[in-house]
Image 1 (tube, rainbow, N blue to C red):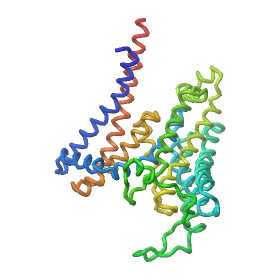
Image 2 (image 1 turned 180 degrees about the horizontal axis):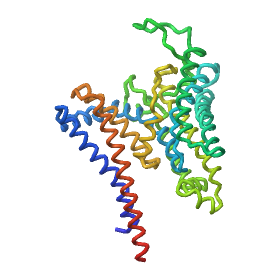
Image 3 (image 1 turned 180 degrees about the vertical axis):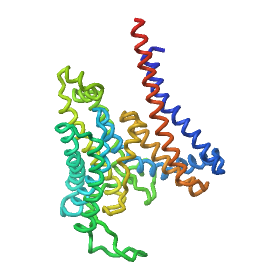
Image 4 (image 1 turned 90 degrees about the horizontal axis):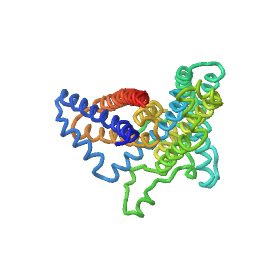
Length: 372
């Protein structure tokens, strides 16, 4: 086997070995709480993959993670750690919800793209301050983005509860008090589900499945990010700055400019993370809107080794684990915490395996270079 292919095979094998190790650790945990690991894993696979509607739920769950994973990966490529994806997607989602209910009378082909653009713009705006502080003042982006996450959460809480709350909403059956939420988004801004398209191929999904066109959009975005990183001059500069900023500067690349563009692009992608839930499932934003996609996106990017294809696969794996967790909770009596442990061990294993494998490959390449 040629050396390049051998190293590529080792790179690809390391996540699989790490996943196998995590599955083994999960089995030990299940055995420790008195469950049969084989039966639990069988239940997980059968529940998650036996029916097409369950697979569609996995795809729906993976959609926001593809966006957040790509957002994190773009900044990683430039050597930046954008922990602020959490805040950027919350701000983007809020502004999208605002544009969704405040703008009325627009046709769908105008309103929906406009709402998506507003969400992306919101992510960019929330990424401006940390990248400015990084480039102009040397403030580490981890510190500034963590602080901005808290500010975003509190700001949105205030805006939803005290400024834009829908006071005209009717009470839901069984609910004594009105929800603390924004007004409902106009139908012209909602993302259509894929039921009609899939029915052309004989796949009939029930109404409780919310798989929508943001999933193929996320796949297209992953392809676009791959092209950007590996086929464009900016992608070359991005990788050069990420590997060695000093060497990149010596080669005529301006690291500050590349970092600024990469961070803003990361914010742009992050701003769209919550749209699948907002424009398909909820139809409004409230205080209980899903949180944590930004932090999970870090895990997804690490598992996918910052590769768009790897990120898609990692997001699908997370979607599968979350769906499978519902099955093992209901039918095997396994607590959700066990699946969380499995996810944590998997992430840790992949990070360690990736670092060990990268060092081994570098050492081998250096040795072969010295031997001529």
